[in-house]
Length: 131
Image 1: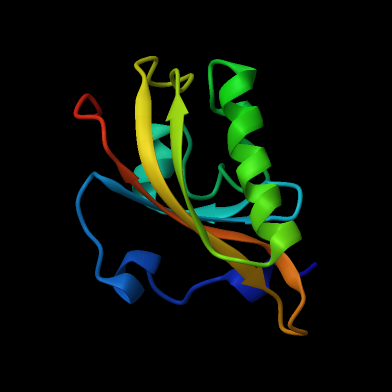
Image 2: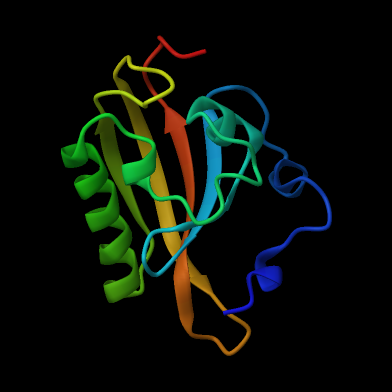
């Protein structure tokens, strides 16, 4: 798949008018590898918006169980072709070892042929202890 299809001509935050350090935007392929993410998620997870591409939640989280849950949620979206909201708790990122809980809205990400290419997500951080 051509990753350029998912490229944005300006920062993705400007499309949604979202700001602040409580909201993360991201998009992943069918294998839950990141196609991209906003600056906040990328830096919070210890990456740049370029270096997060092709990474997975397993590359970011301290514990595999958290990544297993996130990937399972991604797969539900892909298999059921629906939009759902999840409460996702992570025991810690490798770059930020404190627990994080987020309310995540995930939807199918479609390619130019109309096939599901992955997941688009918006996650709102509920915990108060984050950078």
